[in-house]
Amino acid sequence: MNPTSTRTLIGHSYGSTVVATAARNHTLDLDALVGVASPGMRVSSADDLQLPVDGRVYAVTDTSGGKLNPFDGDPIHTISDGILTMRLGGDPTRSGFGAESFAVGDAGGHSLSGYIDPAPGSVAGTNFGYLVTGQFDRLE
Image (cartoon, rainbow, N blue to C red):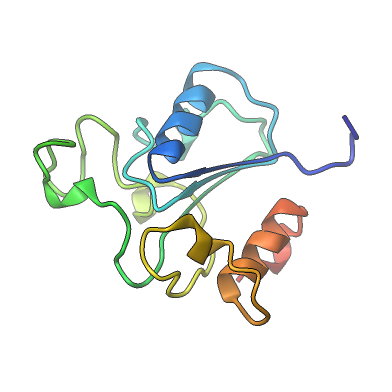
């Protein structure tokens, strides 16, 4: 592997639960771990993930409210009081979780394609481009 490459792991929806569980249970040599439209990452805070000291944790969701949201108390997926979600962990987009965020605008609901939209001028697509190329300081 190229030592100057950026190592970013992105999980969408329940995939964010999977990648965070891996990072909780194993030391992952990543520059960034990203939960996109996450229903929870099975940890109380970003500090519970085993990343390098300079590793970054991001949690993003679009402005349409189209993410799969067990935080509304859906009893099939979780038991929730709005802050602590018993099965999947707390909402990673809340400020107390400790994840960073960046703008994704209205990605059009829950579909991953809206978040990685390559269309010119797409704020989400532009920010994901910065993310995977390690240009963290350019994220909006």
